[in-house]
Amino acid sequence: MDVEKLRKYEHTLAISGAAVVAFGIWSVVKAVVYFIVIPLAKVGADLRETGGVDFESIQSFGITDRGLGYITAISIVLVLMIDLLMRFYVGRAAIIEGRGRKKSIFYLILASVMIVFLGISIVRRAIVWFIPDETGIMKDLMDTAGVSQILDLTSLFALIQVIVSAIMVRRLREQLEVS
Image 1 (cartoon, one colour):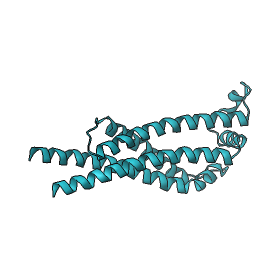
Image 2 (spheres, rainbow, N blue to C red):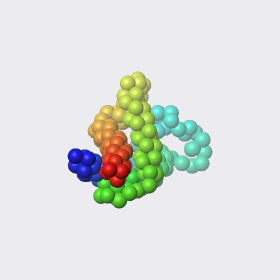
Image 3 (cartoon, helix red, strand yellow):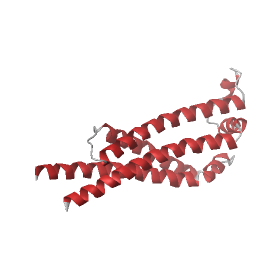
Image 4 (spheres, rainbow, N blue to C red):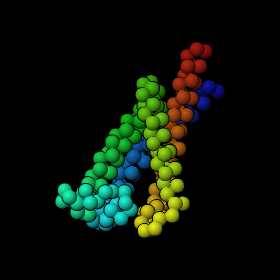
């Protein structure tokens, strides 16, 4: 009975690890497509209009809306690449542990940190949906992000599943070794 449970959790751990990697790839693809579809000058102008950036001080350096769009795009892609590397590490470690090899607990700690940040991001976006916006820019952005919100929730559940499955695999392996 415990061997069957162990196999079930190992399989779940490997599948959840693959999902974590897939969602990391999706987040990069989503950002790249967004910046291909939306002109970078519009991204910069939207940032200026929402008041999130002190545009006067930025203009003193000779940066235009388009330049601000480029800076934003590069920053977001860099953050997403770091996110992808972390997801790749967590997902690969989960797959390896799901296949029967023991891994360090570091990937579970990293997955926990990712859960916290992803959870904060999801809650923040949900709150923005309900805050009145005079310009309507944030509301337009959030309306187009509905599908992304659902995918981020699914990604969050995949990370949670990695942690739960890894804990169960470790406990069941311990029980089987003792008996």
